[in-house]
Length: 302
Image 1: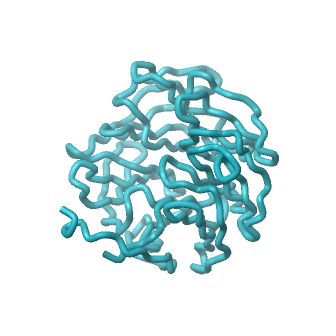
Image 2: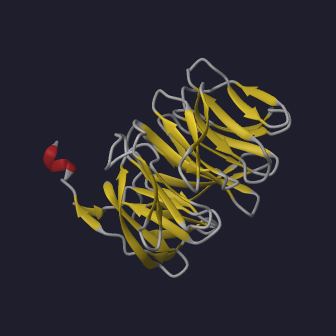
Image 3: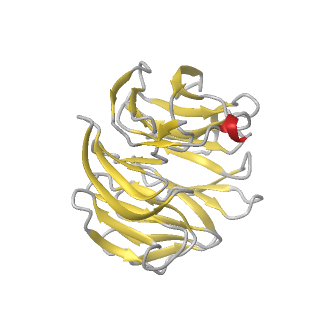
């Protein structure tokens, strides 16, 4: 069965540059505006977790591998040339990397260890958060959402004060901020919108049984967007628009993508199929020529 070879995607927040990774090592850099392949990098990337991220301007790409060593750890590359900027070969069991919203550091999620803050220029450790397993920060304010290690511990919205928010399930899938609200999705659970100043819940969207919302984005039309997946049955991926004020959900379209291989850009979403889909209309507005792979036919192996 012929399908896309792309398994992970990351889009720069402030430029039309996207990184698309195969199952391991190879990462393609694309210009979304003209569907042009900019470069192809050999990296330490390994599929799993969220081990690929672009700087807000798209100038740098950071990739990670679960094991440490010369061909592992965390590495920062220049996207156009593939030149290695720095390499943290000592880091092991890395599950996620993410540029901070202010472009001041890289959040590095390490399995069973504190979240690290890495310097974007050198990769040196700036600090660690000993009881935290993941961090999401706002591009609009100084607010940070901290997910503590331990299923029985409350989430924390940290701003001028710290607001504790009870979990709905055992793990956060994604979180995104508007200027005055936080929208978060939890594994096997709801999407919730919380007031940043009080922590009070503005609205809640409960997906159908066996579904959850994988990814979230806040867009300039003042709406939240999400991708809902029927994870129990392996069903369709639906692009949803949520009203920021009420949470009313509108199904925009079905998405042709692997569940974890997509990312939101400015008014668009890029899929593993190479389709660039308008968030407003659900129409395919351009297509990237992603490489293909021949996968085993699931019916022949069942």
